[in-house]
Image (cartoon, rainbow, N blue to C red; front, top):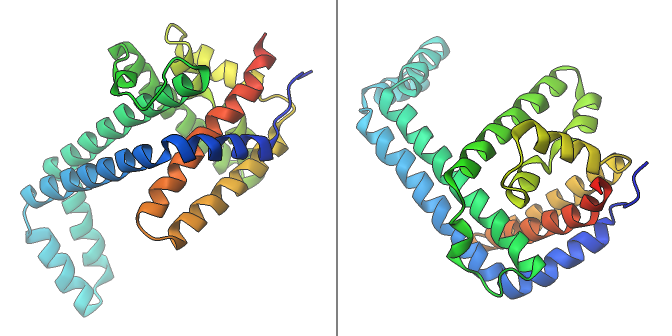
Amino acid sequence: MATFSLSISEAISTGWEYAKRYGLLVAVIYLIVGVVSGGAQNFFGSLAGSDSLNLMSEAIARGDYESIGKYAQEYNSSAFVQLGSIVSIIITIIVSVGLYNLALGLMSGRYASVEFEAFKVPLAVYLKFFVVELLVGILAFISGMCCIIPAFFVVPRIMFSGIYLIDHPDAGIMESIKASWNMTRGNTLSLIGMFFAFFGIIFLGVLCCCIGVYFAEAILLFSAIAAYNQLKGNLI
């Protein structure tokens, strides 16, 4: 039986308080990363050549849907396009690990400000984080294939796997997933509610245009860590 329960309002309130202090700098990091990641994909995409894109455009113009799929597949299978995707994934992993570590450090008092020291974690942590997130994605996909209800009840239970790993760098991959599963026991409905609240925050960010989206991401970052801190006591 879980001892600690999730308070959505408290988690979001805490996330907002930290976002007011540190969110602008975090939002700028998200913005820069988005530009760099998108730029990398566009750059490698341009190296793949424009022939497939031109042929695809011509197929779209004449409504030849079979050819559209064929040329799109040829373009996406290009080595340069694949390399661009890999670079984008690497950037996303580095930023995710660093910002999670930063948020954990700010809330625990380990950091007093936004410090790039948070990105200096062992390479093994980055590699394990990638595998954990990959497994979480696979589990989410499998549960989704089992209809929507299983997905709703599985995804929230494993959402803290990567955060737990960063908070416990020596933890194993399956240990991190198991820890998330155990700490969220009895809180599934609250976590589903938090997902909807997060969607609402992102929607408001979109309405605020450009930087609003990135600031909304900062709020979600701190709110997710606040929720994690509420529930991690269930592992004791």
